[in-house]
Length: 282
Image (spheres, rainbow, N blue to C red):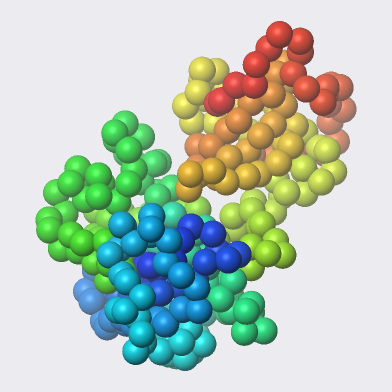
């Protein structure tokens, strides 16, 4: 039996998981067909002030949270509702953000959040709709005609729109950018499935890859990867490109496949691009 999907969303006191707090969790569990199974929704009483920027997004005030349960109780209830890690696949728009908050809140209580797989619908949308004006949830809902369901920016409204987006973009057939919950105070993990690239970075190995888009076309190119990092909800790979002789930045979701060249003598790689050449984006 295939696992259920759970589209979920967190509202928080701010943008930084290492210091900010979760103040609302909304989630909807559904079958691969889209049929809803159940919902989870709870406010959370934080021990941290709500930033003005976050308040402008979700509209929650300290007074709204005064009688809400603390995060420890809410996370316990959320985990009981989710069930075993092999029974559900979690979905979130900008999944790394949500994965870091779940991991950070668990770490504050001295435990590790279970290793659920969290699939990023933002990366999926960038792959399926590369020409969209932007890939914000609001924009995509309007572009795809998903209706008014979840028009506000509260947790339940947004997770319902994530479900609609997943179904509209045929998320089951991928591609997928996946994360596990993590504590940002102690680690900054690469997305799941990129362990070989992390190994290549650690060992200084060259990699042959096919990249969708960019100025060089679909032919395989040899790179020496430097690091994986995240910016604005996107996962990037910084690498030295042997084809052009300079450092470039590639979006992970556009890398169709890659192969380590551990038995190949790569040409020397400068620590910086040639003089006068700027770092480029693939």
